[in-house]
Image 1 (cartoon, one colour):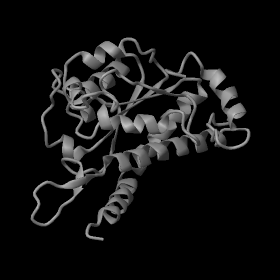
Image 2 (tube, rainbow, N blue to C red):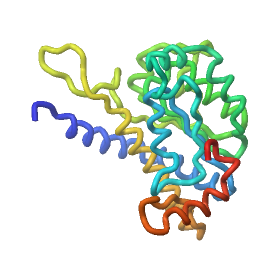
Image 3 (cartoon, rainbow, N blue to C red):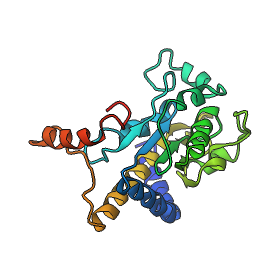
Image 4 (tube, rainbow, N blue to C red):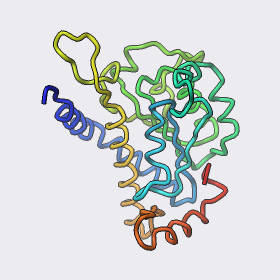
Amino acid sequence: MLTDYIPQVLKRLAEVYEIQRENLQTASQWIADAIEQDHLLYVFGASHAGILTEELVYRAGGLVPVSPIFIPGLTCDVRPITLTSALERLDSYALSAMREVPIGEGDVLLVHSVSGRNSAPVEVALYGKQQGAKVIAITSLEYSQSVRSRSSTGYRLFEVADLVIDNGAPRGDALVQLEGFAQPIAPVSTVLGTALANAMVAEACALLHARGIVPPVFMSANLEGGDAHNARLMQRYRGRVLYL
């Protein structure tokens, strides 16, 4: 191999796990508490940060009460996709959509943004806090602390969240540097972010199980009995989980 992308990913993931272990435990506790009390986990990310949202929603082995926040224009199926960058920076755009999201006290909101500098993730996090939800941010502190906020609030995501999980991504996200080529290649935030998010979900399920509560977890629809299992759980949350 001419590049060392996977070894670098594994190294960063191990480092992040050790450094963020306590914060991950707190995040898992919040999620378990919310589910035990019949509340929801809401998840948001703009553009490629939203891949983490898609990973957690309607996912085999994942929690059923995960409500995705998909704001029009901020998902990767938009054409031209460059529109996502413009709308993510537009003040009050995400806030207008959030006013239609039934998030409230007792819920948990997970917001993913690598740089954390744009208006959308900041507005989503601030709105969630104002409604009484606990807000968890997954972001890169190295990246975010090196740039100015683009939000009219003057805040970056890590400055408004109740709990910050540093994903350990480098400034600019790309990880591999080629000799004689100025632009780094191969982003790492999605790999790190989804690993951290799934670690939270796994630990939350373990906490619920330890309390004698059956974790509401999807079964693969491609296994026998999967459809019936999932239908029972979805019926419980239908009308509350967005898009279910």
